[in-house]
Amino acid sequence: MEQIFFQDRYPLYTTTIPKEGWSLESLVQALIAKIQAHPVATFITTFDHYAHTKGLPEGHIAPSIQGAINILFCFGKELQDPLVVAVRPRSIGIVEEEEGFVISFMEAPNPQANETMQGWVESLASGR
Image (cartoon, rainbow, N blue to C red; front, side, top):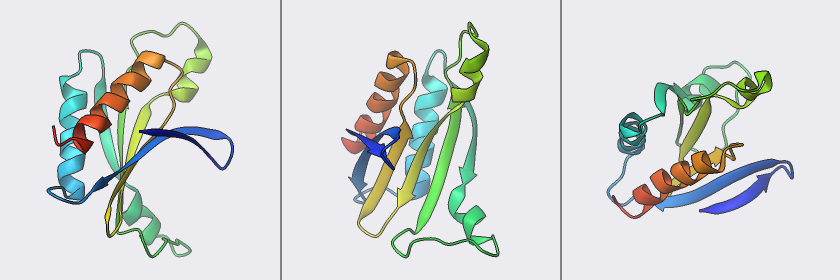
């Protein structure tokens, strides 16, 4: 995974996975399974960002984007600071393009959460 700054201010982790053997739905289901198997993470829902944007009267989608789903979940096992809720829940986005899937998530304030999310995504990239 690569760490970048989207729009020079948002710290993201991102990678692209070839389509070979994957569909958007199969990637979503694989990540949901990883979230549900985690001892602390809680799966919340999915959000079809593509359908939402397409349904807006002024919605615009880049021609290269064929689908976009966000998977929402939370690692929160502590509430020690009232501001922590501003960075929860977490979301991993999967965007389908012609050649592959772009998977990305915003850096979490918890390094262990980042390592876990990286591991989930990297395991998909390696076919596990």
